[in-house]
Length: 204
Image 1 (tube, one colour):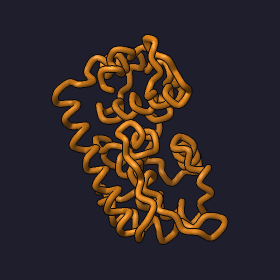
Image 2: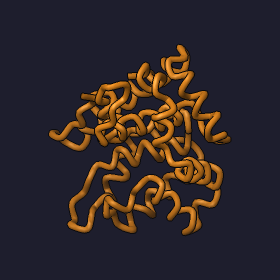
Image 3: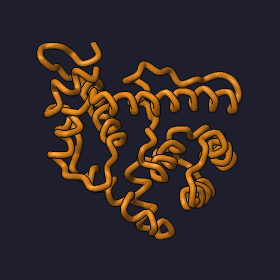
Image 4: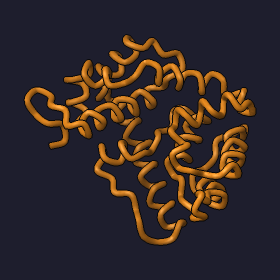
């Protein structure tokens, strides 16, 4: 599918709202303002966190962890967030995607895991087992993403599309890893909308 992204990079990139790109730049640039309510609202809005109906306690813990001077390891981070992850119905949830977004802000060369990335790579999120077992499997997938993005960048597999993204948006704080995330997000979004490229339905 990297070939599809490159071949149709104009269509793929057109799916990305410039306002979202600018919002990402802000949350990277203004991370020192993490204690401000404005920053936290912007952060939560960008990552679509409010839909998860998590408690104030979760966000207090989450942003406290984000302030750490060094990046967290995902298993320990997931454990810490799980302890405060009760939704309005009282059920605790494994917030792995939000954990990867936290470590990405701390180290923007780390990839982000979410449902669109999972679909692109034909991942199936583990649904059974203990929280520790599910975290271990998801962390293995994240480690795959780290290695795969490094391979893509080293071999220039998405160089045309990454270059086009940079030409279009002129980002200052985007790593190649984050641009790969945008490109995957946009292509899978096209697929979910039933887009047709060169006479073929994406992910038919």
